[in-house]
Length: 152
Image 1 (tube, rainbow, N blue to C red):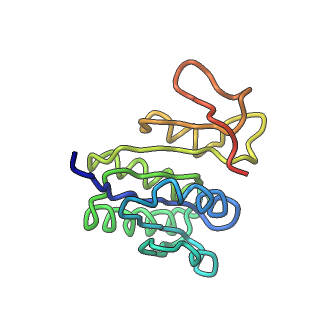
Image 2: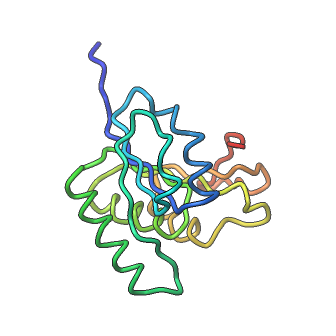
């Protein structure tokens, strides 16, 4: 049987979102891995991954969000990932939304910090995800939010 390597793009904001995303990167070690983040200082340390930095995005900065979306659209168009994985926040939502438009499978891993409710970005991303994961069993529901354990 032929070994099929996927092109997996992992996208997140800087800080805790990126820390959690880096913890799941080994699961994709046998694939072509692309790591995209807003944190220049945090983006290193992903052995074997091709690294890209994008501008930060948030609901409070429309111009930055449009710039982030534009850069993500160019990256996704050029690299054509098979799968997009994100831990959030706004840049992750944009990547999932744009990636789905271009035919990529999409996975969202909601942050461990969201103990009582799914994050706003996660709520927006859920309809566009093939797999939506929470790290808290109490937040899992039958309509598509699954819990497979915690990252931290």
